[in-house]
Length: 330
Image (cartoon, rainbow, N blue to C red; front, side, top):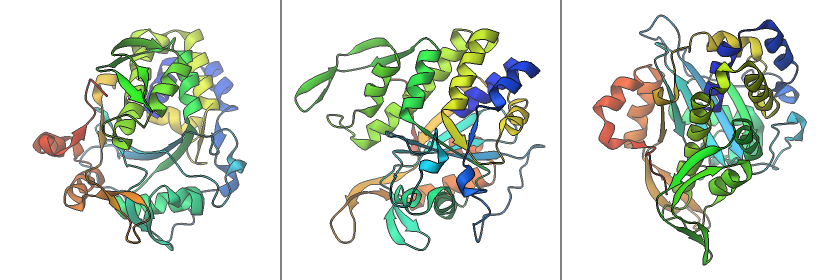
């Protein structure tokens, strides 16, 4: 979602000076060169019913810094991801979809057998993570992005805070973390909100919803407060975003701006958040790990719709079977 906001911001920026100012600050996953080059097999390129091709961006986020600011920080076995999201931009450019994959989903990881999906990044960096997600979903990934939650805190402050409603008091370890109510949160407060896991009725599933809710709140704030139409505020926002992420070498500012030019009609209301279908939690075969069980009976047709660029129609037909982000989040 932050990617979508940044893309729209580049449309609003419009100036060569602003574009050049941002270009030098964008990080790339340079130490691994092209993370797509090492993939042995890949899903086919989507034959879209629209004039334009759809775009699928794999976004990773973490509660600790994992190569966002310095790609050279990635090392074998050192990092796992807390958030795994697939941003799908359909060919008709009428909206965007953010699909979260729970980090503890038990899936096959090429060359390693079955494990939690977030282990793929730890064991093989972006290339193995992309390969694992493509194998799980059958969706061809076009671009890769990684950020940490501190990045979202900085973006929160850049838009003047975010409005988040908490429907009921929440607690962790016997202490109240938030009283029910609507808050204008700064970056530090929003970070604490998104980090909470214990004391939430849905555990990690509720944490995913909070991550999505935070992203949605940043996007809404950027639009509602005119950040994208104010040149000075826009430049601060885009510089903050550019300094907070790392992307594959094919997704630099020029590519982002080109994609952004096709998204001029997309607003926060046109962006949908959902979590991929699961069958709850369970234990790994050896009984040692708590895992999330993927519901392939529902996941596979959903992902076929993404791969075939007909997700909007699928969601209309199967709305009752999909875990959408609600307006009120625990």
